[in-house]
Length: 182
Image (cartoon, rainbow, N blue to C red; front, side, top):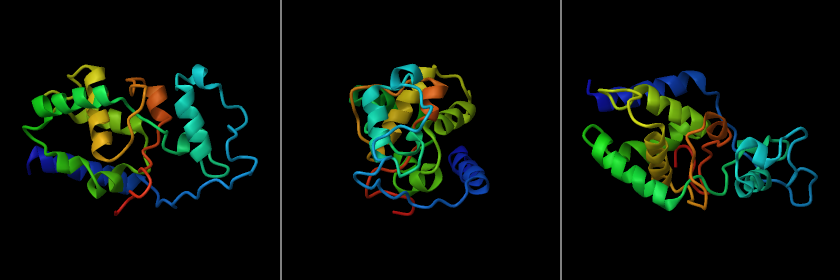
Protein backbone atom coordinates (compact mmCIF):
# COMPACT_ATOMS: atom_id res chain seq x y z
CA UNK A 1 0.00 0.00 0.00
CA UNK A 2 1.44 3.43 -0.90
CA UNK A 3 2.24 5.95 1.81
CA UNK A 4 -0.48 8.19 0.36
CA UNK A 5 -3.11 5.55 0.90
CA UNK A 6 -1.74 4.39 4.25
CA UNK A 7 -1.90 7.92 5.69
CA UNK A 8 -5.51 8.31 4.58
CA UNK A 9 -6.40 4.86 5.88
CA UNK A 10 -4.76 5.50 9.26
CA UNK A 11 -6.47 8.89 9.58
CA UNK A 12 -9.86 7.37 8.76
CA UNK A 13 -9.33 4.49 11.17
CA UNK A 14 -8.22 6.77 13.98
CA UNK A 15 -11.15 9.11 13.54
CA UNK A 16 -13.66 6.36 12.82
CA UNK A 17 -12.80 4.60 16.05
CA UNK A 18 -12.49 7.63 18.28
CA UNK A 19 -15.05 10.15 17.07
CA UNK A 20 -18.63 9.94 18.31
CA UNK A 21 -21.37 10.73 15.80
CA UNK A 22 -21.84 14.47 15.55
CA UNK A 23 -25.06 16.34 15.82
CA UNK A 24 -25.16 19.50 13.74
CA UNK A 25 -24.89 22.63 15.89
CA UNK A 26 -27.85 24.95 15.94
CA UNK A 27 -27.28 28.68 15.64
CA UNK A 28 -27.68 30.82 18.76
CA UNK A 29 -31.08 32.31 19.36
CA UNK A 30 -30.86 36.09 18.89
CA UNK A 31 -31.44 37.86 22.17
CA UNK A 32 -30.72 34.76 24.26
CA UNK A 33 -28.45 35.12 27.28
CA UNK A 34 -25.76 32.94 25.71
CA UNK A 35 -25.82 34.28 22.14
CA UNK A 36 -22.71 36.45 22.59
CA UNK A 37 -21.69 35.70 26.14
CA UNK A 38 -18.55 33.72 27.02
CA UNK A 39 -19.00 30.73 29.28
CA UNK A 40 -18.52 31.54 32.98
CA UNK A 41 -14.88 31.26 33.97
CA UNK A 42 -13.54 31.79 30.43
CA UNK A 43 -10.27 33.69 30.48
CA UNK A 44 -10.11 36.91 28.48
CA UNK A 45 -8.99 36.41 24.85
CA UNK A 46 -5.55 37.94 25.43
CA UNK A 47 -4.89 35.54 28.31
CA UNK A 48 -5.63 32.58 26.03
CA UNK A 49 -3.38 33.82 23.22
CA UNK A 50 -6.38 34.03 20.87
CA UNK A 51 -7.01 37.32 19.08
CA UNK A 52 -10.11 39.05 20.43
CA UNK A 53 -11.70 39.10 16.96
CA UNK A 54 -11.51 35.32 16.72
CA UNK A 55 -12.84 34.77 20.24
CA UNK A 56 -15.73 37.17 19.69
CA UNK A 57 -16.59 35.35 16.48
CA UNK A 58 -16.45 32.02 18.30
CA UNK A 59 -18.74 33.27 21.03
CA UNK A 60 -21.23 34.80 18.60
CA UNK A 61 -21.33 31.65 16.45
CA UNK A 62 -21.37 29.13 19.30
CA UNK A 63 -24.51 27.09 19.80
CA UNK A 64 -26.46 27.88 22.93
CA UNK A 65 -24.66 26.43 25.94
CA UNK A 66 -21.51 25.55 23.96
CA UNK A 67 -18.01 26.53 25.03
CA UNK A 68 -16.40 29.25 22.94
CA UNK A 69 -13.99 26.80 21.21
CA UNK A 70 -16.82 24.73 19.75
CA UNK A 71 -17.55 26.91 16.71
CA UNK A 72 -15.29 27.86 13.85
CA UNK A 73 -13.59 31.20 14.39
CA UNK A 74 -14.24 33.97 11.90
CA UNK A 75 -10.71 33.45 10.52
CA UNK A 76 -8.05 30.82 11.05
CA UNK A 77 -4.99 32.04 9.14
CA UNK A 78 -3.68 34.78 6.85
CA UNK A 79 -3.51 34.63 3.07
CA UNK A 80 0.32 35.00 3.11
CA UNK A 81 0.48 32.05 5.52
CA UNK A 82 -1.63 29.94 3.16
CA UNK A 83 0.74 30.89 0.28
CA UNK A 84 3.72 29.72 2.38
CA UNK A 85 1.81 26.53 3.09
CA UNK A 86 1.07 26.04 -0.60
CA UNK A 87 4.79 26.41 -1.43
CA UNK A 88 5.74 23.96 1.34
CA UNK A 89 3.07 21.51 0.14
CA UNK A 90 4.48 21.67 -3.39
CA UNK A 91 8.08 21.24 -2.18
CA UNK A 92 7.58 18.60 0.50
CA UNK A 93 4.16 16.94 0.22
CA UNK A 94 3.28 16.80 -3.47
CA UNK A 95 5.70 13.97 -4.21
CA UNK A 96 3.36 11.66 -2.27
CA UNK A 97 0.07 13.57 -1.96
CA UNK A 98 -2.50 15.36 -4.09
CA UNK A 99 -4.48 18.34 -2.78
CA UNK A 100 -7.67 16.36 -3.48
CA UNK A 101 -6.77 14.16 -0.50
CA UNK A 102 -7.18 17.13 1.82
CA UNK A 103 -10.30 18.95 0.63
CA UNK A 104 -14.03 18.55 0.49
CA UNK A 105 -15.70 15.51 2.03
CA UNK A 106 -12.36 13.68 2.21
CA UNK A 107 -11.26 16.31 4.73
CA UNK A 108 -14.49 17.25 6.48
CA UNK A 109 -15.64 13.68 7.04
CA UNK A 110 -12.45 13.03 9.02
CA UNK A 111 -11.70 16.38 10.67
CA UNK A 112 -15.02 18.26 11.15
CA UNK A 113 -15.39 17.17 14.78
CA UNK A 114 -11.73 17.64 15.68
CA UNK A 115 -9.50 20.59 16.50
CA UNK A 116 -6.67 22.27 14.64
CA UNK A 117 -4.38 20.84 17.35
CA UNK A 118 -5.46 17.30 16.38
CA UNK A 119 -4.59 17.97 12.73
CA UNK A 120 -1.30 19.62 13.68
CA UNK A 121 -0.27 16.69 15.89
CA UNK A 122 -1.21 14.16 13.20
CA UNK A 123 0.83 15.99 10.57
CA UNK A 124 3.87 16.31 12.85
CA UNK A 125 3.62 12.68 13.97
CA UNK A 126 3.35 11.21 10.48
CA UNK A 127 4.76 13.64 7.90
CA UNK A 128 6.84 13.78 5.89
CA UNK A 129 6.82 10.04 5.46
CA UNK A 130 10.62 9.81 5.36
CA UNK A 131 11.17 12.22 8.30
CA UNK A 132 8.10 12.53 10.58
CA UNK A 133 8.30 15.66 12.71
CA UNK A 134 11.34 16.84 10.78
CA UNK A 135 9.91 20.12 9.52
CA UNK A 136 9.87 23.38 11.49
CA UNK A 137 6.69 23.82 13.56
CA UNK A 138 5.81 26.90 11.51
CA UNK A 139 5.92 24.89 8.28
CA UNK A 140 3.33 22.44 9.63
CA UNK A 141 0.89 25.24 10.53
CA UNK A 142 1.54 26.95 7.19
CA UNK A 143 0.59 23.72 5.41
CA UNK A 144 -2.48 23.52 7.66
CA UNK A 145 -3.40 27.08 6.61
CA UNK A 146 -3.23 25.96 2.98
CA UNK A 147 -5.41 22.91 3.72
CA UNK A 148 -7.93 25.13 5.52
CA UNK A 149 -7.97 27.49 2.55
CA UNK A 150 -8.61 24.53 0.22
CA UNK A 151 -11.67 23.76 2.34
CA UNK A 152 -13.18 27.23 2.30
CA UNK A 153 -12.16 28.34 5.79
CA UNK A 154 -11.77 32.13 5.74
CA UNK A 155 -8.48 34.00 5.95
CA UNK A 156 -8.15 36.91 8.34
CA UNK A 157 -5.67 39.26 10.00
CA UNK A 158 -4.01 36.74 12.34
CA UNK A 159 -1.76 33.79 11.50
CA UNK A 160 -2.48 30.30 12.74
CA UNK A 161 0.23 29.88 15.40
CA UNK A 162 2.26 26.74 16.14
CA UNK A 163 0.92 26.71 19.71
CA UNK A 164 -0.87 23.62 21.03
CA UNK A 165 -3.08 25.55 23.43
CA UNK A 166 -4.29 28.03 20.81
CA UNK A 167 -4.72 25.32 18.16
CA UNK A 168 -6.79 23.29 20.64
CA UNK A 169 -9.30 26.15 20.77
CA UNK A 170 -9.97 26.04 17.02
CA UNK A 171 -12.59 23.42 16.21
CA UNK A 172 -12.48 22.45 12.52
CA UNK A 173 -16.20 23.03 12.10
CA UNK A 174 -16.74 23.38 8.34
CA UNK A 175 -17.63 26.80 6.98
CA UNK A 176 -21.36 27.39 6.37
CA UNK A 177 -22.70 25.17 3.61
CA UNK A 178 -19.84 22.67 3.88
CA UNK A 179 -20.15 19.78 6.24
CA UNK A 180 -19.39 16.13 6.56
CA UNK A 181 -20.57 14.28 3.48
CA UNK A 182 -21.13 17.44 1.41
